[in-house]
Image (cartoon, rainbow, N blue to C red; front, side):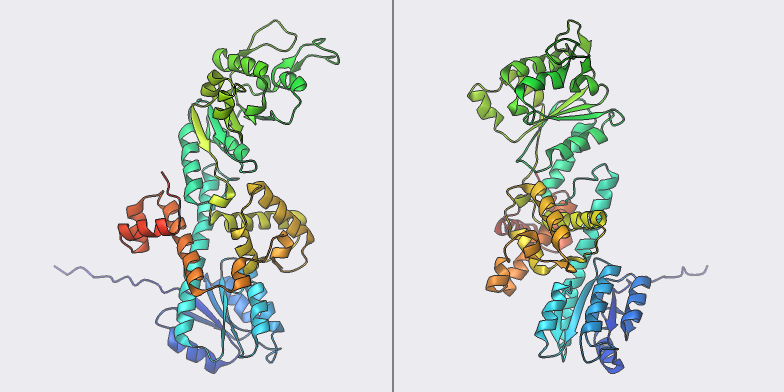
Length: 462
């Protein structure tokens, strides 16, 4: 009997593209890095772009002095912009001359991950490439998570942070039933998007989704908007008109800012929830309605009940399940992810080409407190796309201050802490908050991970 053939599968090394017009320098770098990477080479911009388009890779080293401007930087900077345009997640480490700080900083503003001065210290380069590769992997994973959530019915709610992952989980759990849901959160957090996601995941998804902002319509008109009216019911009622509740038959009715409705309307709405029927204003006939009611508020309804401004029985009818939508400032790594998605969307609308955000702009986005939440982020990025003529969005385009780290100087500890916090948040989101699985992925013990979560004030998924 012949022995079975033993097949050894070797793990493929990550790929790295070396872009330099001098072969001796490429050979030197290739010799020092070939044990860690599958090396590709290019001696000019066209070759570099062709290789990157053909081969899937995340890492590039780029000498700014490329022909036909070997003694300058114009060709190298153009190559940088083109390479980033090929793959948004590619990380380019720029190689510069000793006294060329100005162009090195310009390269970083255009999207380079980092820069190193000649002669290159291979050990330092290895460390920089390792970090750049890990960050690129996280960004690729983020894109996959976004695509996965879009397929699951969350195309408009973008994020992988633990707090937003918990929202996704609750949406999935409540969508299949017809129970009433109260969505709570600050203004601009995306409460209507959560309501739409519930509708899209439910058996009513083929029915209408009718939304009404109860705080935006005068009290005298809100009853007619909700319940409709008969011809002649009041001055100006020249014809019969169905209301929003009736129009949501077979679908979902979303009542935003439910805390703003008057006590009289609260009584009528309670009857709809209890008896599943309505009477139009000026009408005598009861009309049965089959609709699911979702409500949202940014006010403190328990306090309103104590003060007698909101009915307790209505509150408990609406609040079978509560979904708290987190403010943007608590969503950590979701902020740059959201910003990049919105930038791409608004650039397509405006037919403008903007490569992305400068490092300073991303830091400013993360440090700002976002009192207006996602709505404010949308407005600031739309403003930046409209006003900017540069290849990268900078803090001034967003009407934000320069980040503190840039003003005071980013220390190695601050940089390491920032990366560490983001990596832990991403891993917790990936594992659904499972500490044991996250610790295994991060190659640390469970007690160490608990200590890191406490030190970085990371919110756990409950």
